[in-house]
Length: 257
Image (cartoon, rainbow, N blue to C red; front, side):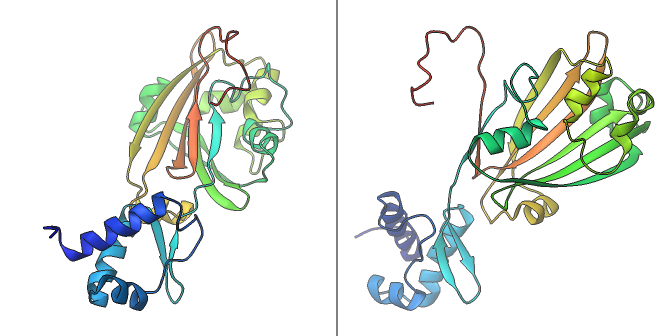
């Protein structure tokens, strides 16, 4: 006889069935009443087991609609090629990558003059609290929230490239716009971290309980100094990043990534 609590047994049994594909992504689980009869348990016990799977990000719960296996339609981002202007692009890198993957991009913008947070100021080598432009993007793939992106540009750069402070999109992408004005980013420093989302992040990205976010902070450098700091916050369940470093001529492009 199992020593595990009954709700844990319910959760483990359903998890195994989901892993085996008995319940496909997007499919509904049986009702609480049906599961209670199957496991010879109270509805409260079943509800606790289902709640455990919700907290682990395996299923979702909707009022009046029951429980559904979470969909995982992964979008893969090649961080080595992102913003690399030697690769063909139609607009900014995000739109190009999503379109090339056969999916539909959509994004909204917010542009504002603000002060530079201390962590960003350290990366940009400016005084904390100094003026900066913040360009904030809320991005979607196939109408599903994909990421938010917050980019800080120091005030001195905005004097040289005033379109950075204008509302709305820069059609050709800010990296190409800056390069066309002689401000070419020739190096990047990337930092990767994970954590649980803040309430605002959970709301914007429609993240359910138990799902972390992936934080990608990239600082762009010219030959002389840093010119921008971008933090992209991804839904941890819908995204995967990869890098290509060094000579990969021996790799078959048709191999599984």
